[in-house]
Length: 199
Image: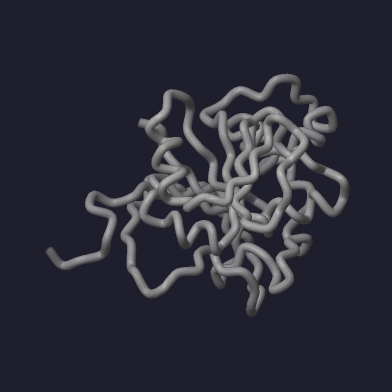
């Protein structure tokens, strides 16, 4: 079965965006060693409009689908980017956005959990959860892998990694990769059973 992978940048104090949803306090262009790692490991997570800049032709990797909330989609939309990841099938969860004109973008008003469960049951590559915190909170029971690009930044407030009622979930660290820039990429898999317990 396909996996749902939450791959996202975050701060030391657990935020993925500013209170207004912006994320320009994160480096706009990754440091060379981080960019090299991204291009080698997760090239499909780079937006399509940046491929020429980075010399990417047809990015191959583990994902063929991306899911995101309206707050993740709208910053690009405000700049006229209506299909940020045109090389992937894109699902944007929103009850207020109109249907997208691009065939590779689908606006979904359905329950995210049921929708993602159905996606995971289909044939295909893994599914990238790009954000944001509210959608990640709803999908937390479905997240199979968490890849956190931990930036050496303390934000103070903002959009948390997940927004959800208290519901501890245990993950197992399987990889930690530090970079000279101070960035640390942490890769976790969902622990057996998923929920935190003493059983």
